Length: 164
Image (tube, rainbow, N blue to C red):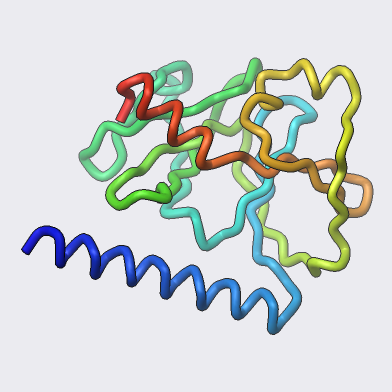
C-alpha cells in the first residue's frame, strides 16, 4: 500500500513537472524568485519549486536548522552577511524539505527565456565564494549574473551528512 502511495505521489510530481515544462515552452517565460544569497551574490529559482518564504527570527539567523510547519528542516546558507529570510524548497524526493537562507526577501520576476544567457566562466571573487560549490549554472539577465543552484548536489550532501 505504501509503495502505491509513493508511486502515486511520484507520478503527481512528474505531472506537475511536465505541466510546468509545457507552460515554459509554450509561453517562453519563467516565473522566478531572485535570491539575495550574500552581498552581491544572487541566485534564481523557479517559483514552482518554492513552498514558502519565511522571515527568520534573529535567534534563527545563524542556525543550521529551523522549524517550519512543526518540522525541523535544514537551513542552507552561503551568506557572510546577516540572514533575514528563508526560502523553503520541496526536494526532488518525496517528503524532503530544506531552506535557503537569504539576506533579504526574494524578488519575483517574470523573465523571457530568450533574455537569459548561460555563462561559462566567472570572476575570481565568485569562483572562490562558498556559493560556487552549489552552482549548477551561471546565467546572465540584463546586467545581473545569477546562480542556478544545483539542487541534486545539495540534497545528496544533506543525505550524506545525515541532515535529513
